[in-house]
Image (spheres, rainbow, N blue to C red):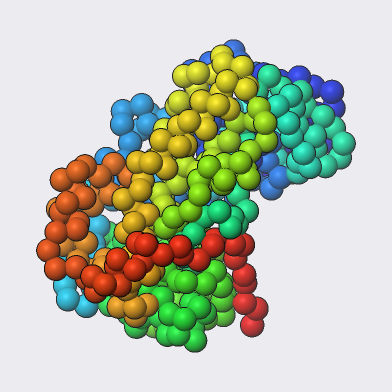
Amino acid sequence: MNGLANTSLADIRTEIAIVGGGLSGGLIALALRRQHPEMQVTLIEAGDILGGNHRWSWFDSDLDEDGAALLANFRKNDWHGYEVHFPAYRRKLGSTYHSLTSDDFDAALRRELGQNTIHTKRPVVSLDAKGVTLQNGQRISARTVIDCRGPSGSAHLTGGWQVFMGRITRTNKPHGITRPIIMDATIEQQAPDGGGGGGAYRFVYVLPLGVDELFVEDTYYADSPVLDRSALSGRIDRYHEQHGWEGQITGGETGVLPVITGGDFTSFQAEQRTEGVVLAGAKGGFVHPLTSYTLPFAVETALAIARDAELPGEQMAAMMEARARKHWGRTKFYRQLGAMLFGAALPRERYRVFERFYRLPAGLIERFYAGKSRFSDKARVLIGKPPVPVSRAISALTGKGAPLVAHKEKIG
């Protein structure tokens, strides 16, 4: 996958150095190539491929025309409509839904950016406003340095965790699923001793990748960042058995994502900051605090950086910090909902919050995921009988919440 494994990067100069070839870093490099084809850009990734081992999904309405154009050349799965399943009802919605794998992300970027831009298997040991130092001692000088590496856990932010394991299976016969099931909460909810740190809201996410290929992900919103591979794998096994799906496992992924309910964002920025270095992606704070959704924000960030690519690095760093503060302010509503989810709803009753939410209009649901809820949307979400006790909701909103520290993995 890496045509540059033996290419020397010693003593080179580039205009823009991007550290971290995940979703945010890759899209920034792509947007720069599209808007400034003459500009020298260097994309540096520690791993073997760009994007790691991930899958990103989004609604058609999440992106404007420019955003859709940025993703147009990626091979992806597309579906017209999706479903949600809850104990009280099942619902079909007509929205167009897309999903992109890191393998296809890597392949498309290599086609469009070329080998002179992409440098994988290059761990970075330090960076500053003037360049990047690699693990092997090589130095890459740059006018602008953009740090897109993921953040470590931060005591300055509070909340809970979204823990998941996904599995791709080639089924022995057609599985019969025709559209994604974004949330199947009809399953048994997380038991207190099941790796969820005292209980969790659990659901299964299903994508039909082909007539005989399925992606099934077991996900739960938990108080504790514990990833128990054995428990998750066993639950996926049982879900397949319940539906009569047999076949060969061909791939998978795991993850632990923060669900942010509050905190001191100014201190978080100071903690992540390297003076004069541009911060993007989750490290810059560009995430949906409740759903951990990143793609619409990564696209917006990439286009914004491309528009102002001629700025000196220090000015671009200040511009992106200001954008991050605005994003934090705009997403306060979602943090408040997250605080009520974790602080007011009993773990095994958390599904009721989502069960009520998915009865709302489809457009409202899509704007919610994109972080673009209108005032009327917010009122509609909050109006009516609350799915959690009012006294507990007030207590959750006024409480401090648990700090978001690095996740753990349970072996066995």
